[in-house]
Every structure is written in structure tokens, then in C-alpha cells.
Image (cartoon, rainbow, N blue to C red; front, top):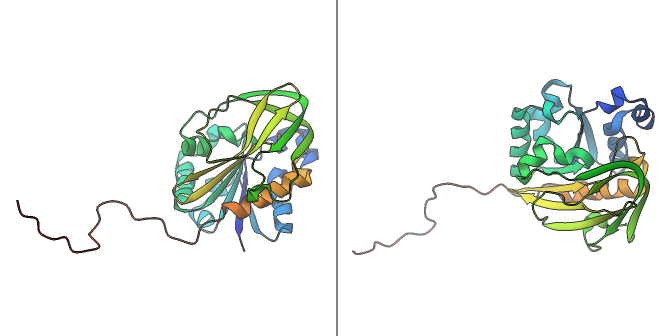
Length: 242
């Protein structure tokens, strides 16, 4: 069984009654709920827990980490970021949602600013499937339509994705690379754009399906990380005359 940890800074839920009404168990609780229904073993962790809930033991027992953050990126400890980064390099999958694009861990793994355009105007979003054969798009039609979402627009300052699965169009005219995958070390990363806190995006069954699929895709490969550094020869090296 795939072991998933859903991490959320859990600040909007405490400050904004709209968010609290939409997600009474927190965004992390909502995501954990539908992942449990998909037969994954799921735990949650939040910013204000000791070590942000991401202890060595928790991460060691996590196959895929899901990350949602927005207004408290700077409060995440650099030590914990390095710990998560190492686990990704060792093979743990990472799914970064919505405003997690600006999280320390995503920026460290991307090596760029990860900046973009944005606007809150209750706009329609249409996420077009541009890689219909990809397993993350399994069970999804030609597009997912959301009646109200926050706009994210290009240019999205990320490295060229290994795979582009979804491209969004917004009512105001912008487009955005909304479903991107990357490989870092032994680990796989999926960035998925939808999920502004004041909209019921995570209630949408197609959005849930994409995240469920993403967890399955991002699970670790059954192999050890390659050994680096000075290496002894596998074969005998013959003596060379000068």
C-alpha cells in the first residue's frame, strides 16, 4: 500500500471563515479523505507541529508527500526543506499543489524563481489534457472545467518540464502550464495548479482523480539510489607501458 503524507500550512483555515466553512477539517483533511477512499495509507502534517510534522521518521515512512502552502512559506525551516529535498533525491515522490509553487522546497528543487502572474476574479478555468496517454490523466476527458478559480498566467518561471500533462485557459485570456512533471535524483515531482483556498476545487471529482493518479505515478521506484564518488574498477585494469 502506498504511504502518503499530506502537508498543509493550515493557516487560511484558522484565519478565514470562508476557507473554514469550505474545508472544516482543513485542506489537508479533505485531500487525505479522498486519498483514503482510494485505498492509500494516509497521514497529515501541518506547519505548526513540531518539525512541521515532517520528522525523520515520518519522511522515512512516506512514499509520496503532498504539499499545500501559501502565506507562510518563509516560516518553513530550512533544515526541514533540506530533509525533504534529500528524501526526494532518494526516491520519495512529491506532489506540489497550487500556491506551493512558491514554497521553499519547490524552488530549491527547480532552481528558479517559480514566479508567475496571478489574479483573483472568480474566473472560469479550463484545464486541457495535452498528454492523453499519461497515467496521471487516466480517467479524465479532454478537459476539466472549473467555474471559479484563481488565475495563474505565463510566464511560469520553471525549468522546462519533463512532461506537460495539463495546460489551462482562463476566462480573462491567459494560459498556464498547470500539470508538469520533473525528475530529481531518484524522485518524481508533479506540480498541479488548481486549488485556491476560497473555492471548493478539491471537492471536484476530476481534480481528486488527478491527485489520486499522481500519487500512483509518483510512488518510489523499487531500487536504491546510485552510488557516487570515487569508484573501484569492476574489471582488472591492465598495466599501461609509458
